[in-house]
Amino acid sequence: MALIMHSGPGNKNVYQALIAAEYVGVDIKMADNFQMGSNAIAYYVARGSSLLGSSAVECGQIEQWIAFSSFELDANLRGWVLPRLGYANYIKPVEESYVANTKRVLTALNTHLATHTFLVGDSVTLADIITTCNLLYGIKMLMPKSFTSEYPNVERYFWTMVDQPNFKKVIGEVKQVEAVLPLPSAKKSEQPKEVIPKAKPRNVEAPKPAVEEEEEAPKPKAKNPLDFCRIDIP
Image 1 (cartoon, rainbow, N blue to C red):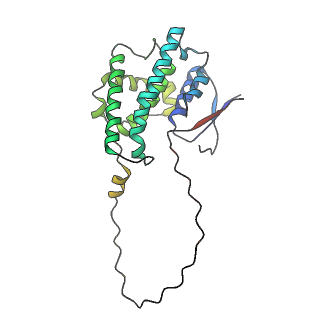
Image 2: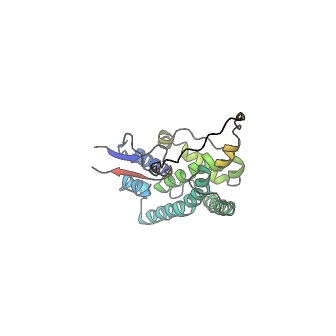
Image 3: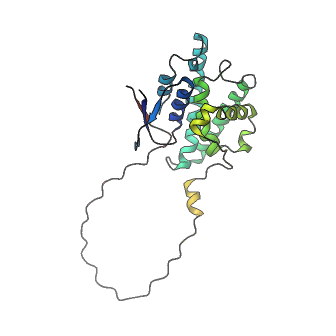
């Protein structure tokens, strides 16, 4: 019986679970018309397989890299991208801090990958799946070649991972962004301003008494596309 995944499209956390499922042969189907993230689902899918290591030591190392990827890499890329997607307020010094932290994280990752093809052991593990998926939005929206060229081992690692058949089946072809995603205000300023003709003067009538209007129901807040997924376990 297939597992049912509930999430919107393009969620990197869903990618993690779906890629893990391709490696271990678990059938996962996406729920239709569901609008709602987590490493927990990927852990569940990968349980009992080589994706979690072949020894207690490797299992611990995988856990270590997953924590690093989640609390260092993903946290800083997320903080950097959300204002540029319009889901958080843009504050320049805050963004500069996220960018500096991202560079620090990539430097550490680049050093490790100078002598390792994969994060742990000699084959793909859940640590590689989660780290690659966390890098994905950075590569697609924030970090052009001019940024990532300072981390050649990370570049080699990322493109090696996304070229794996099980990755490509889930996420498709990946194209690196040519420039950092502009801020929403910058996008609006590029739109040509509409010229409104001046109205001709006319006789002004006495204002009519104001009629109280019913208050509109508050609109739901925009959902963050990087979050929220759930899986039904039969």
